[in-house]
Length: 246
Image 1 (tube, rainbow, N blue to C red):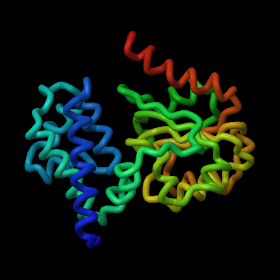
Image 2: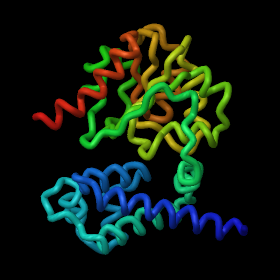
Image 3: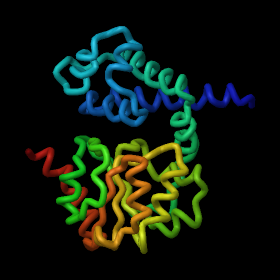
């Protein structure tokens, strides 16, 4: 199969995945926002491409405007993918492995998707974490707890990207960390970047300065915690339940 045809199939499958998730979501605006953030596309860029006011996109994402129908969702999805393609399409390519395989990596200890996003400060509070580097504040739509040694030693860069699930706007929690350098190096060489990184098993003062420097370069929030791993996962999952109850 020619490379152009392969890229076309990936893009079509990804468009179907995105449109389906947004349309079927109980909170389509949140799902739309998640995908826009996944591709790091500003509301103004998306609205400009679509020829509408930025407030239209903002209203859809916040729920102030009636949920978009399938035709509008399709237009928005195609706009997001076209803008990303014009930028080089690296993020589209990064999703290829997720689209064509459902195999779960043995490196994943736990993974979870949020209906409502969590902020980094709230995340830090829930898992009793030190904030090593504040980075750029982004809403987090899930988390993945990863065995850092298995992920770094056994996974290729392509396979490593599968750890993100369907949203890069998530906290990537690395366990069995000694200094924090190796996980940050692995993140630096991949096209997809997580919304936040948590080093499990270290206090903030124990994270290597090189790891902190790489977080600063990529502008990724970097946290460190020594909370029991099962307690940490339970606390993060309960956040979603409490949010719904509120």
